[in-house]
Amino acid sequence: MPRNRHASTEDIHRHLEVLGYDISRRTVERDLLALSAAYDIECDDRSRPYGWRWRPGSHLPLTPSLDLQQALGLSLMERELGASLPRVVRDALAPWFQESRKRLATHGGSKAARWVRKLAFRPLGPPLLPAEEPPGVLDAVNEALFTERPLEAEYRSAQAEDYREVRLHPLGLIRTGLVTYLVVCFDGYSDPRTVALHRLRRVRIASDGDLKAPPGFSLEQFLDGGVLDFGSTGPVRLRLRMHHAAASHLYDTPLSRDQVITSQEGGECVIVEATVNDSDRLEWWIRGFGDLAERLPDAQKPSTHGRTESRK
Image (cartoon, rainbow, N blue to C red):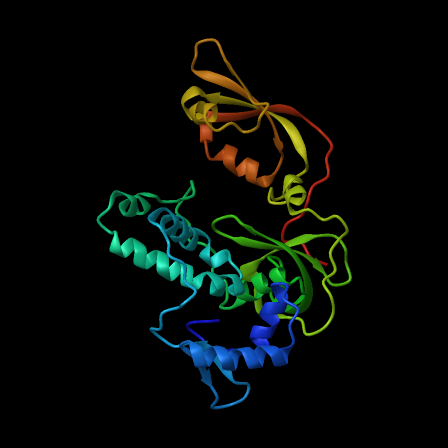
């Protein structure tokens, strides 16, 4: 049951079906009337369809009693994953999130409550602002992924000037920190592609048709194919001559599991070897070191790979 907005009987019925409950709409209507008589649930009957929600400021009777550790975990989840959760999941967790905030506020002076304020997550690299997505896009995408239904939207690729109407079959969501990508099959095609969410607008759940996904599709395998390595030509055995200071971080965060670093005579430079996807992103990374890194000849290995921001 939503707290900050009204949901129609049809919305609640659909939500229950998504969660696996086999129940008729008429039963939902009867149960809502009975629950509203027992709990602080209000019905907005000013117009049809009627809307239902918890009354503002009401105590939710089904809210669990959280200990401090559970409140900390839920607080972190809301802060770091809240925007990625489908709306139906956010609505279901809202009482728990609210209770966790109250619990932490009550114990604001404790070490455990202060701990959550000591954690921060920031990507490396220049402080770029994330791509701005049109309102409602992420909610519609998350709902489509959750309910496994196709989407209709307007889409503009990086190379196009105008938007065009498309029908998409969503397969997965990839968050990179700055840009969120939706893995899709364009209607009529079976090869997975990625589209940036900020290049979509007027996204809505398709009113008809079933989701069409490639047999055996795995988001993890799709990512392992180097889909986000823009312009990737497959894996290569990379060889770099780097100043030892520039390469120092690679001892702690290697380029690959088979990375090898060999010191050269004099100790000023090292040779770094690693199997990586050869891509524009790799070239940008190397150029960022300026004169402190030089790419040496490497041998390319054949491989298949994904594509990003491509379309039919």
